[in-house]
Amino acid sequence: MMVRALLFILLGYLSGSVLYAKVWGKLLCGTDITQGSTDGNPGTANAFIQGGFWCGVLTLLCELLKGILPVYFYMRGMGPQALSDGWIALVLAAPVLGHTFPLFQKHHGGKGIAVSFGSLLGLYPYWMPVLVFAFVFIFFSVVVCVEPHFYRTIAAYLATLAGLFVTNVIPAVRYGFGMITILVCIRMKLSTEERERMRIKLLWMH
Image 1 (cartoon, rainbow, N blue to C red):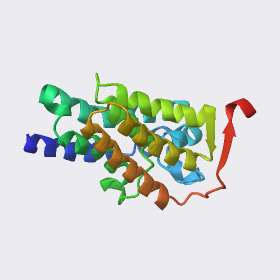
Image 2: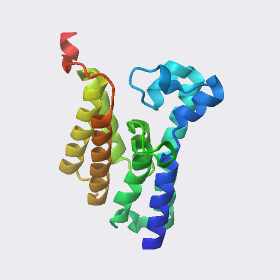
Image 3: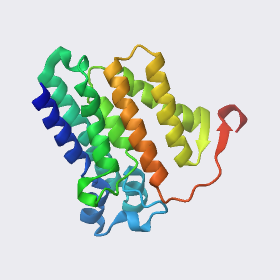
């Protein structure tokens, strides 16, 4: 069990280390799309903004898959006990670690939002964690809109983590998302993007 888990942790980290915004930007646009962005983030948003529709779509799909596949195949190989052992927490976090601190980019990675969704989707058919995460992101984007995106991201991860601890979510998954939250917050802290003052807009007051 340990050898298998360590193998999938390594595969997850290496999978996460491929920054597809850079890959598809280079293939489709012939350029590094992060160079023209305001925050330099090699993520899905900049793939759409700087690289166009197809660059964005392909980046999004690949970013999701690099989180989904290691987690899903680990779960499938382990069977029902996969969620009850502690290794799933590390398997969940490994692709996000790869994206935020990638081996192939001298540890200068992205924020890890899409791959976080991918890791949680890899828990299929265990939907609760990804549904909580999606609900919170939508809530902070539409109902209680936190701006700019820098603060919205941090708020969404922290609120999701809190939500997973107060709902009936398997403990190992909570701890895995806890590690993901720490990684994303560290990467956000290290980000060089300009940080505007935080603003909160309520849906019913727009």
